[in-house]
Length: 271
Ligand SMILES: Nc1ncnc2c1ncn2[C@@H]1O[C@H](COP(=O)(O)OP(=O)(O)O)[C@@H](O)[C@H]1O
Ligand SMILES: Cc1ncc(COP(=O)(O)O)c(C=O)c1O
Image 1 (cartoon, rainbow, N blue to C red):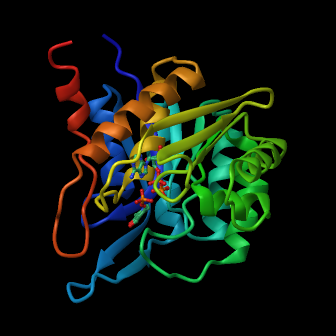
Image 2: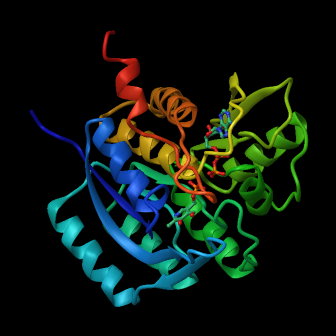
């Protein structure tokens, strides 16, 4: 049996819910082999759980990429990149290795944190990574930033932003309405492939335990692409996977509740 290999270029979430930790758990659950190129380490202050970001030297990232690419990969994803230099490096690696199955999760801030956005990294993401994406997975806020439309409040604005981001070069754009978008009480994501819009509607799960949802979702898409699925099929599975993981999100401490990637396997145990 040949196991497909996926690379994630992302940050380490020391609390285990998001970042490369979420990516690796998702890869494992979906039957692909994960390899990690770490950009940064995020720690949380026990009092108040404020995030502190500890970037790694770019040279260390380069060495990790060399290691992974010497093995070879079937797909890749990006998560928290942090600096323009790292975004440039990711773009270079995609080009030099002719990587064709690329999921870009344009992480801009951590959930619940009011970090100041760095406009330069947003610009670099828009100009260097969106054009190289097979699938780009912005949440509502990130979609507004990439498309430069400002806040997205209704379906027309969501469609407009998706079309603009597609125009920037991504083959598939999926904007995650998630819990923040109000659409008849449903959690709605919008997929645009340049021709058609497809709506993913699921029940809105009443929970705040969604830490790592975005990372998990994009990792699941990358796993599907690695296995040879078409983008839409990979997104269908990723949506079912994340919905189950959110349903089984749990309280880690008084500040945070991660999603549970192990939930999907139970759904299929008796199938
Ligand atoms: N409360 C919820 N109920 C159902 N689905 C949700 C909920 N929150 C997020 N999702 C889904 O989880 C996935 C990740 O979305 P989101 O949490 O918005 O990403 P991010 O972590 O990047 O902000 C999307 O498919 C979104 O629709
Ligand atoms: C390393 C890292 N990557 C990504 C994220 C984004 O997480 P989410 O999937 O909840 O949007 C976080 C948030 O804490 C993080 O620490």
